[in-house]
Length: 305
Ligand code: SF4
Ligand code: SF4
Image (cartoon, rainbow, N blue to C red; front, side, top):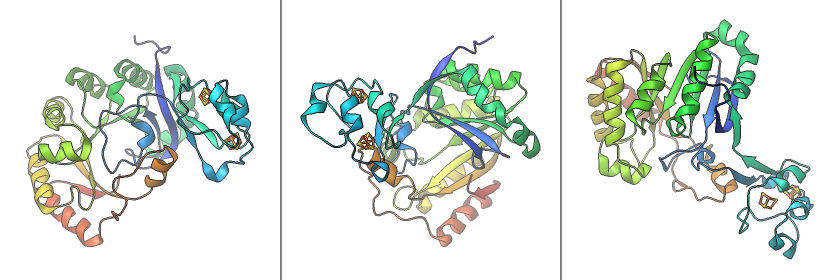
């Protein structure tokens, strides 16, 4: 049996989630992702390390964070500490000292037992709604032992399980995790490999090959496709992806996820720049076209998660 003492790095445990599989769910977000999609709405999940963020609207400029920091550079100025202080050890002293929650640590090490204690508080909601637990990220396959132990613990409790993955990982990890998931949410973005590299930072060869492996082993796969104008929402890409998915046997649903700008503020909080500053959500007309392309390929399609 996989141990419940197994631990991993998590950046959020989101309750009452309605967009990560059927029913009411708790979504556990694993930290660390090998992709770097230009439209990412969870940039805090990309780095596999913990990180400090500053919510400027909450900051009182009291300087408590600076006083708590043991580094010599902290006492060289006043006001709030900069996010990227040289030699920062991520000790968390400044976060603990902050009286307003303005300075926060992203990412915490959690054992399977700790995550399960949180997850099980909402069992009644799962049972009433046909929901359960979704493991997402970041990319869950980056922490395979933690992922397998968590899914196994959910199974022991009889909870419905969903794996939400980019598919970019070792095939054996994907198949082992999928074997313990009732449903797999599998992201597809662009079929052209060169374009995929430009938009996500990685080749799609592993992702496409893994999807074929998964399709041979699993009976319930939902394809999740973000639609981002100027990136992947052109007719050619939509038609190529619809053709690719049509040839799989066990895709039960395609989710088209319109780009939204809610992740953009997070980039600033993390001291990162968002590459799609001027991009807007896709029009209703574009969404209708995308739906008809996948529908005409004989696929069940839904807008949203
Ligand atoms: S995490 Fe520790 S070392 Fe880093 S800025 Fe905060 S108090 Fe200083
Ligand atoms: S302790 Fe918190 S509120 Fe005070 S300056 Fe630092 S971040 Fe701002």
